[in-house]
Amino acid sequence: MKQILVVEDDLALSRGIVLALSSSEMQLTEAHNLLDAEQLRQEIPFDLILLDCGLPDGSGLGWCAKIRRECNTPVIFLTANDTEYDEVAGLEAGADDYITKPFSLAVLRARVANILRRQDSSARIAVDGFVFDFETLSFTRGGEPLELSKTEQKVLQLLVRSRGSTVPRERLLDRVWGDSDYVDENALSVTIRRLRSKLEENPGAPRYIKTVYGIGYTWAVKP
Ligand code: CA
Image 1 (tube, rainbow, N blue to C red):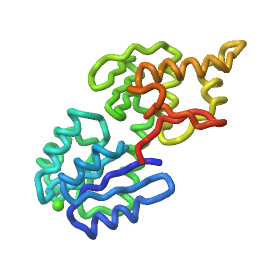
Image 2 (cartoon, protein in one colour):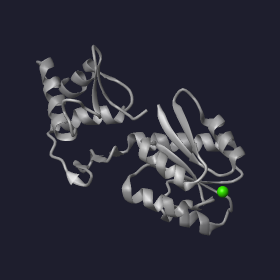
Image 3 (cartoon, rainbow, N blue to C red):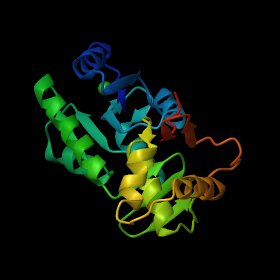
Image 4 (cartoon, rainbow, N blue to C red):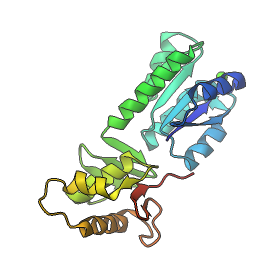
């Protein structure tokens, strides 16, 4: 399930976007000003933000630049004027794309799908204060480096890429240990325990890497 935040003060447009994008795969949340948007962003790990440039309490551009300093959640600007200046300014603030109003809902759906697809294949995942870069193999929590073994990295990648859904034990065993002749089921439990001890504040009551009894593990997303 993808979490999408729509920040738009034109209520009819905001509602239209939500209706157009809502599906079993996408959950939409609306904010009509930057204050609410920032509050929601602290609570929900959004996969994408659709952001109006002109909002009652400030500029979407400035807020986007702030988001960029903290995480890599993709941002699509919804811009009212089709001037090159707006487009360039939007992209310099760190936007991933922009759509000029008025836009068709088909265009909106296509752009959103494109960004979400790109994000899924991206090697760098920022989630819950962690930044996991599976390309440069740099892993941090609140900017502090984390040391992870190759096996821990593989398990972690499978979990965070599917965050919010359960990854079955069999899939983890197959994808991480599939090449070895003999797989000790216990190896997975040990790796999960080590990951928790490195990532969780309280490994005994994990917040992120949850056990789904009888099935597997999930990187939990806040409801
Ligand atoms: Ca506006």
